[in-house]
Length: 102
Image 1 (cartoon, one colour):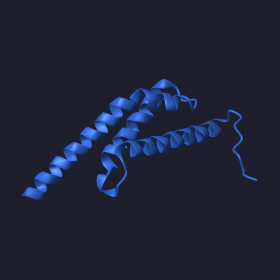
Image 2 (image 1 turned 180 degrees about the horizontal axis):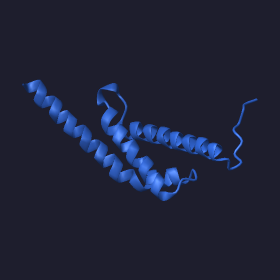
Image 3 (image 1 turned 90 degrees about the horizontal axis):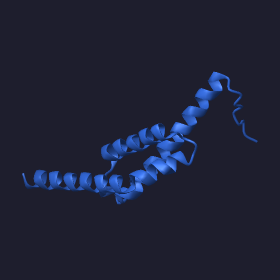
C-alpha cells in the first residue's frame, strides 16, 4: 500500500514538473519550431504533440531531467514534421528534388 502511495505521489510530482516546464517554455518552444519555417498553428501542434509524448514516456528513474527530455522530444517531433512535409511536397510535384547523397 505504501509503495502505491509513493508511486502515485511521484507520478503527480512528475506531472507537475512536466506542466511547469511546458508552461515556462511554451512560447520559446513554438518560436523554436517556427524558426524552422513552420507556421504558428502547425508549430503549436508540434509542441503539444511533444508534451503528450513527454507525459506518456518520461521516466524520472532514468536520470534525465524533464526539461531536457521535453526538448529532445520537441526536436524529434519538429524534424519528423519537417520530414513529413518535405515528402508530401515531393509527392505534390512542387519541384522539390530530394537529396540523393554524395
